[in-house]
Length: 307
Image 1 (cartoon, helix red, strand yellow):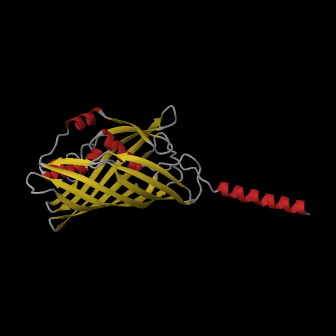
Image 2 (image 1 turned 90 degrees about the vertical axis):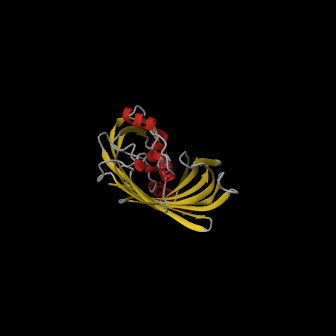
Image 3 (image 1 turned 30 degrees about the horizontal axis):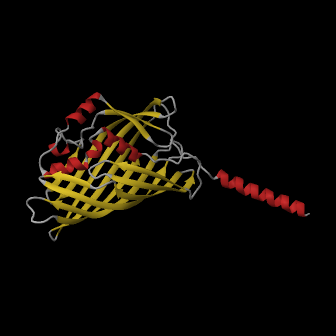
């Protein structure tokens, strides 16, 4: 009788273990040749700072729509994808005034939007592996020429806008932005509650290092839900020259959000991440009697949608 009870107990343990293993899911991209999809990213940001006792706020909302097509597979199974920026809208409010732009309703691109629109209507290619790593970015010849010919704008407002758009006005910057569209999967089957981490560096106006912690929160017929927590630190000491002033940044922050993933393709159906970065900016200029320290807060809400 004791042996029978032990056998039954062992059987129950094996069944329970099997059920736990069955709940594991393999998160990865599963795309097919000829597949087309549209991804839209909206970035709403609010920059608050205090200068000489006065509070200033700059708010903006920028939306990028990219059209993608899977051209085929590489020899090692990575997806070869062609992309094109097909639509851009922008609305910015600052002490320097309001700027609005919609690529569908303008005949001529204004000077301040040149850097933002440099990839508009141009094709590029990259590879994406099943775990979500973007590699092998290749710009078309005409887009390369635009990158090479991009000149510095002159006034302070345009310099700021060009700097903020630096992530899409170079090959490396655009590659990093495309990586932001893609979830980086763990490369192994995971079950609910499992976490994995990825670390990245972003060389834009202010270079940051980001540690992202992903957690699988839900897995069902409607797709997967993944929670995201980000830890953001400045890559190194950053100094920027603008209008005869030297500005040094000391910033750090964090971000939280959620992605809903299509269980068939692995693509993001919808995702939203809210990021807050705080710190100080030190400004030195021959026009100032002493260097000035400015407290600053960046709050950004990034939304990604599969259309």
